[in-house]
Image (cartoon, rainbow, N blue to C red; front, top):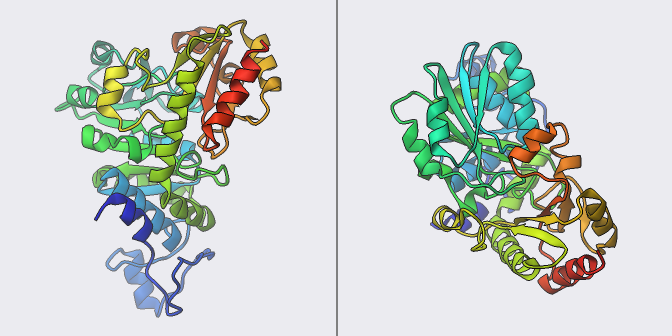
Length: 387
């Protein structure tokens, strides 16, 4: 059965009411037939729901779908994407361990690795993500974890996941890939050799900017360790958000095709505009890793970047001139969103760190939505022509 069909047909077991659409299980806890059943479920001798902090039918359905899409053995859902990242690191690592991470990460992920886990004696070395020799040179005897985004946020740098996976073979290093921008529709990192794949489900998995959520999928042995951490620290996904996210997965394939189609068309239309220093998109031939993008991804995704000449002053003017584009720090919505990373999502990084990953004062991230592409082209060109 094709994945698109499974994303629609996988659902929680029907109740005696014979519902067609899965109901919301808005309950904090579950009952037992008797004390012996409760004991056996707590002892994990038999399956069963206990408490929605641990599991819930809506959450289980969402996780099952995500594991199917990512070709994963197991998975775990979280309240946010950052909770998924933090729980993966905290659940798998201990004092004295070493992480190697790409320097092109979402700002909050960098803060976790430099300000939070560092307090627990977990060291991190940041490297140029697409330089495989830099990864190799950074490995120490105590290196236990590789972490990267591909494509990266917001610079759209790509990492050869298969090459990185091959590098750490035989070294007892866990490879985790943030797959938020690509989604499992465009690439499946586990098939390329990764051990874990992480998503902010808030973005494309939801697709309409409604709810928060996160998920980790991958090898069962690692999910088991992460689950222990999450079960006792409580970064749980709510049943309502899980229900929304599960329903959203039914259209993920169609949405990602259209996001990608619109993004490529807009990138092509804006290339060479005199107000723009550079346009970057994975499936543009001008992208420095175009061949890797074509090899590793099914489509180019819904994100492109524009480096606006004149820096923040011109970005500010552009944001005021656009008529149908939203100005927001989010992405992955049906509505096109423009973000200025240097002053928002990556503002806590130093100017030097931003420059190292290509975040200039003129860089804007455009999360291309599902509007009619002719309307998007007209809006951007009208605004840019006035700069």
